[in-house]
Length: 368
Image (cartoon, rainbow, N blue to C red):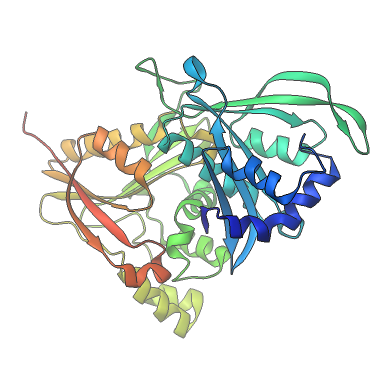
């Protein structure tokens, strides 16, 4: 899980932080800084700092702070560290994705990395996969412990879909279509799992099994998908009473896939998420946007498609639920005219489902 960093967390993370400082391969920090000086730099000066914790162990961290003030205060800056033992497990990616959502929640519209050491090729490739562009090169800006003087990159990503009140496309055009062909099922399962894996982890602990089950349970016709060329980059599912995006597998299928005991347990946990539409109601079953396309208005366009589909099919309303840990999604829904109608709290189930409350929201379709 990712949560805000405390001073106690930093003390536990200090061996990793200190090792990265003294290696002099990625950060332009004084390698002789004390723990107190490092805590101030990483946690006190920035707006916020977060940790990635797994089973009580601090495996990674990031900070977020303004990159400038006044006319440039809409751009933020972040830094990331992952313990050596935890590298290669996707933690840096999760931290960066979390930081982008945090940036938007804090009102930032863009993120800039001021000095990415060019020899840190793993980081450079990851940031590019997540949509960051190299906008400048600073020659011989870093004295690498092994390689000597090397270049640094300035990398940038626009996060918000708002630019002076106009839609920001950044030159990318997305096609929104209903459903997808079988060749895209595996990619769709991976994208969906990246967003909802923590929610489903209580039902199916193995990530690979979650992806496998998702691939078998999808009914593509109950969805709208955003494509960048032939690459799926977003999905919005729905249920209309006759079927749903994830309704393609039942109890027998789960037991066949997971075995009797784990299959029955998965059935029990998934039943907590079941939401059947009322008469005249379309239920939206989550919007997911791939990290490479976030901040480009894909989620907004998918939501518009759901609303238009409901109108065309004669539904009276669209219903959805948004969890308490996703304020960014709620802001999007409210901007489209969804209104909160009730909030259910279940703190006692947080250990199982990963959140403690959910708010039901409705969009009322008006007759022309």
